[in-house]
Image 1 (cartoon, chains in turn red, brown):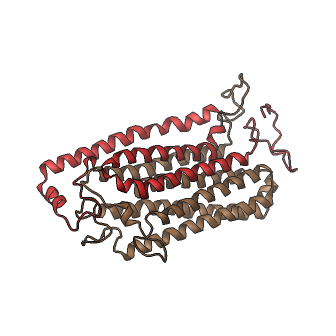
Image 2: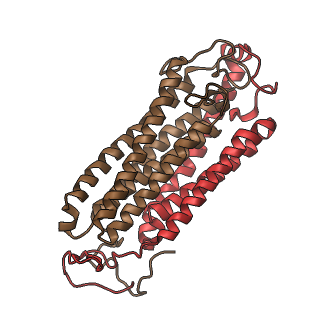
Image 3: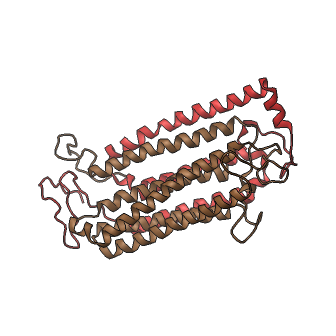
Length: 158
Length: 230
């Protein structure tokens, strides 16, 4: 695996079993592990099934816990994203420099999410306080609430 | 767990890729980063709009139908089928990449065909869903507001077009990515089949197309959570 190929033998991989060499890449051949791929597949499928069962059967019964369910969905989604990037896109098996050049800029999403959702929430509060039209629109019901009769949910994250 | 590399490896002394990947693959990663921020901007603006609203349509009601099964029968089942199709086609794509490592042209062709079938199946599902919602009266700038419609907000107030605008824009943008992914995969299939990669001595193009295809799957994971679960 970890042999160093500094010679410039360009593209010498015509027979079946010798992986090709690229001058700029040290060890291009990753041992391909189809077991790991299927394991990842089952993990992704399992997480999706959990999300669906919670979303279809459990969450509709506990309306006041919606925020908790949303946090659960966020964790499960992040787990799925991790497995797709790490295994399917193979990032976990690249060298550390490569991983960091992708992972560090992605941290911007934390600020991105926090700032804009906070902003949306603040806008909602301001409109409810100062915009009478907006407030009345929200109070005008066109139909009985489909299930449960809970009033407006805090956070607007229904 | 990063690759095993000799401890004294000098990545930055020239002559080799400091990230130890081929140039085109690195650029594909950077393109996908920029694309991730585009999708991120869409999804976060959706989140902002939703946080600024007092209530929002309930996905369990909006997305409750399945072809030939009518309304209210199966909430979220159709979209889970779509998710399954996309994850499955991601797996066949990895298998194509793996076959490329082994320089096995026949298997590459086989797995690419399966990946393309998965992509087309996903697009067909999405076409059905769009058509269905359109016939219920939802489109860009339109949402049914009458009592008893599936789109009524969870607290019973009138829905706004925010819901349909964001839904069609974001799933449309994602669907466009799936479509271009299918086109790219068809080109890769033709190149693999005609032996272009075999003559070249490597199947790196399949890897780059694969990265794009997995990214499409990755975005769907977030679209799924944001529109169908929250």
